[in-house]
Image (spheres, rainbow, N blue to C red):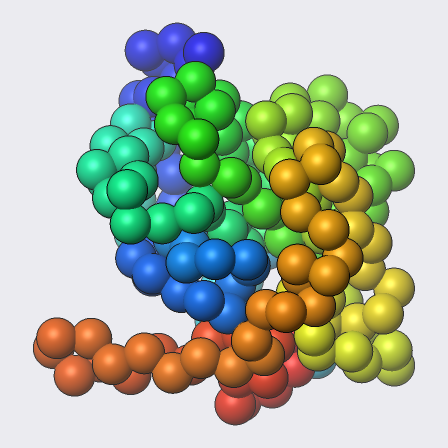
Length: 196
């Protein structure tokens, strides 16, 4: 379980979508981290790349509390970005708390390869409590845009047996959400505005 100091860790976020069906199996909370130095050509979310002066700053404890308060209405959480594993302490603490206090699943979408994650202790710790990691740089020469993989080189790394390839293939490729304040969000692998 994460220590109190880990729950006080700042987490730089781009956005949070309370409920989505296009970011993994079931209804999921989606958390976009702010900041990505990988800058894959053709990335769908370039607005999530800057780290300085962009996004929301929250504590891990705040994000955990909001997520657990909604736990009966969602199956799990999808962490994406930006690059969640560029903030490994925050991600590790968040995933550990979810694992300790709920049955929610965690999917991590990352541009780092499995090898890069396994060779880095902080990144390895960040995904230790994830159910599934979808790993690898986006490659616009290998477009796929389904099953939560933007390109065919991205690898499914099952950390538990919770999800199968068939579960991921059934995820809708596009979702349009209209919030109470009339904000429109397009999400999924075929969202307009680029590739992912």
